[in-house]
Amino acid sequence: MTASPRLVLDTVCKQFEGPSGVLPVVSDVSLTVGEGEFISIIGPSGCGKTTILNMIAGLQRPTSGTLLVDGRPIAGPGADRGVIFQDYGVFPWLTVKDNIAFGLTLRANRIAKSDREQIANRYIELMGLTGFENAYPKTLSGGMKQRVALARAYAIKSSILLMDEPFGALDAQARSAMQNLLLEVLRSEGKTVVLVTHSVEEALYLSTRIVVVTARPARIRTIVDVPFEHPRHEELHRSQRFGELQYELREVVMREYAMQARLRGEDVRASGSPITHREERRA
Amino acid sequence: MTNDALAQVAVTRETPVRSRPGTVARKVWQLGLHAGLRALPWLIVLLLWYLLPATGLVNSALVPTPWQVLVKFYEQLTTNRLWLDMYMSLQRVTLGLACGIILAVPIGFLLGWYRPARMLFDPLVNFFRSLPPIALIPLVIVYFGIDELAKVVMLFYAAFFSGVIVMYEGIVQTNPLFIRVARTLGATDEEIFRRIIVPLALPHVLTALRVALGVSWATLVASELIAAQRGLGAVIQNASNYFQIDTIYAGIICIGLLALLMDRCLRVIAARLLQWQERIVP
Ligand SMILES: Nc1ncnc2c1ncn2[C@@H]1O[C@H](COP(=O)(O)OP(=O)(O)OP(=O)(O)O)[C@@H](O)[C@H]1O
Ligand SMILES: [Mg+2]
Image (cartoon, rainbow over all chains, first blue to last red):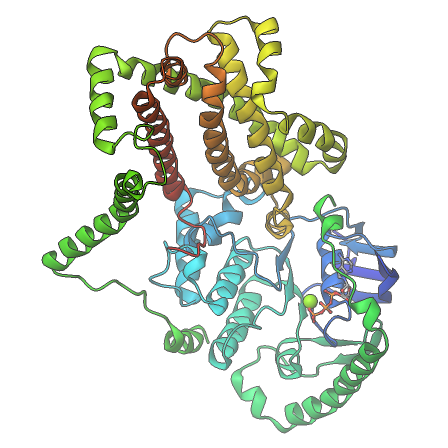
């Protein structure tokens, strides 16, 4: 292992072919992520954040440009990059516990049954799912499903975490508990994280760098270095510097969101094109 | 901080809902109500059947009463070994259905999974599916004779094509999200097949089985037109030759009840296996 960065995106572009022509979604995104870094991506809805994450996960290929993990081109998905999907993807045919332990039963990360049990139980406890171990997902709330998805991804201890609005369905309290839990997990396991979020506050609290992307097609608008020391605690929210940075960043982000709104007025046709999922299915 | 986070999570921790324990009397009452509601539609049909001749709309000589049919049924059962006919029919349906579904599941799956295969074979499947089994009888006789095999082949045909369609329509709608999740957790192709695709396909297999079961019973009479000595279709055939309308009724009701019974069994099995599914009716 040389000191090659964990993750490199080099002039990555992605476009989709729709019935109404070519839709450029990601445009010239270049980014280098070092070991142990925590990168947040903020940008307006529909700009291409999930697409960027999918490409890093190896679920979609870029139209042009390269993506490297530890210096090697990304060929496909793998257990080294855990993903928390925006729409959870909790397996409906498995109980909460089996969902959480699923990754640990696969050959790629198989461990002894007793260890598996222990890890699953620990996360059930940490995620506040006690009493629901044997429940099927149909009986869970959105926020509970999201916590199952989080636990399932944490359980396999992948060294890179790709998180797509992982706390979106949680109430304010659970959200802050989950943020702190994530910080705790990072502290003990040393992961590299790419997080997509709409919350400037969340990004500031968790990240080492924040990437603000433009309205579709996603380009990097600015990258903000977050100056706060680790370990971070709740009190950080109350510091003056945090408040100032939050205010500045919100300005930048708001401008992009406004731009997106304007774009949407112009190309109703393009955004109205039906999304087909065929492409990834065989990917 | 873990304690801190835990304390906060604890605030939002949900408690599972347990159904209130009802009294025994209440349970019995509910069961009774349930059974009554289930029997109601049958009672209505029986009542209408009784009243129909009285309306003068039909010739009462052509419509036996439920009681007459029941008597006939018992008579057939005791003197004419109707149970053997039921057994034969049941055997043919089960055999044709089993062979049809065993083949329909993998083929339906492949058609659903691989788009080129679907484009290639979809017209063929739909062509053969629409052929009425009765129209095939002469050919079946030519190629398979008039023995047991010929009947089972017809049932197989019906079961296979109805099963294949259900299966592949279901597979086409598989949500790719679950496969992507499994991939990112490190699953191999084989693991994805076994742990994701099989459970996702299971509901469609069961639906295919149920649809094919219905179609098989519907085809049964046609298949037993091929020189069958025994079987419910043969019973109906013979009875119609001698214009024994009450026996025809008894045979038809037998087919309906057996089909209903088998479907019930499948539904119970499906409910067991698919507990996890979200349903409009719990
Ligand atoms: N498979 C696809 N085929 C065609 N178009 C797609 C596909 N996937 C995404 N898109 C389009 O790409 C654009 C970006 O989608 P993406 O999911 O990356 O947005 P996002 O930034 O994650 O949005 P949000 O914040 O709402 O989750 C959207 O306009 C979407 O319609
Ligand atoms: Mg998204």
